[in-house]
Length: 218
Picture 1 (tube, rainbow, N blue to C red):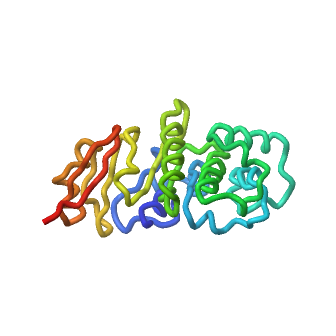
Picture 2: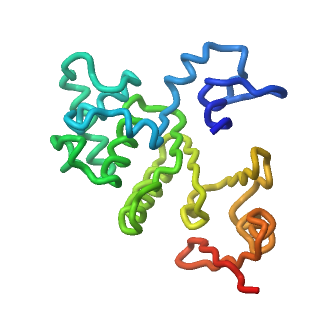
Picture 3: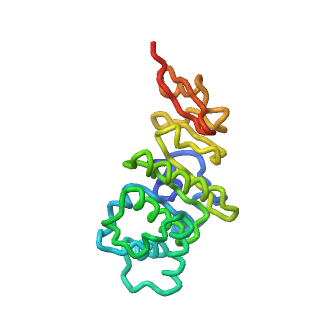
């Protein structure tokens, strides 16, 4: 949480320097930085009113607001529908937000985060609360998004190794607020490294290009 707040410019590191999107903290307006970042988290999901239309919630991402204070413009609604269509959920556009499932809400919030064409998209535990089917559908969407030629840079936060997709090039393992290890999935997602990280014996199994972990019985 502290790291994400620093990336968004809400807090400063107590020492060292901080650069986000090539810009060094203290040398530019942080408000401008935040316009370049899309952030999806469960905390944001809980702040929307249930009666709002899905497409209106997506449009609100342009203004980084909770809801709209004026009627959405035609071109904004068209972009919102385009994003929903791109993410495979255009059928949700006219639905009330409160009628959506947890997985559908997450897709809508990702579309909202993309509304302002951010350079960086942060997905903070987006699969929390999803059943296994909804989770896999969401991960398929994230995989497509990460492979978009002109898509945003992506930071994906998770507690679950199996959510680390092959498309993710760099992995950072944080343990009690400190860096445990940093590198590629091949370097970090090993029996030895994850056993040290979780402080228990771990066996990593690779299935269909994804890594799954099991506890080793003593």
